[in-house]
Length: 114
Image (cartoon, rainbow, N blue to C red; front, top):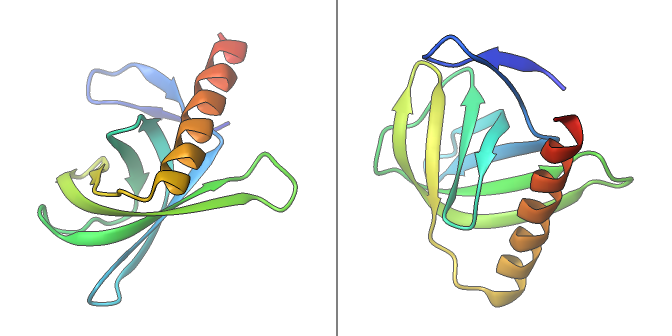
């Protein structure tokens, strides 16, 4: 796991989940997930998209063989020099079930590190 230092100077562990973001204009951004819940995701990335940009965020769970990929529709809610936050705008029940699994897995993985 990689570490980063947040705005308050505290080191945090990143989760074993990667996010790939693509907007309608074709811009592709890859980054590491810092926080995830059923409402959205916060990620660290080298560049960001403007707030309000509609996009598809694909969550990639890398700790499993063959990596699990979950594409979800979203919108950029926050963006700054530390990364961006995307709120999910998804209604597909099956994808939300997969997301629930990723969130549960991420929580259990972070508890194991503690």
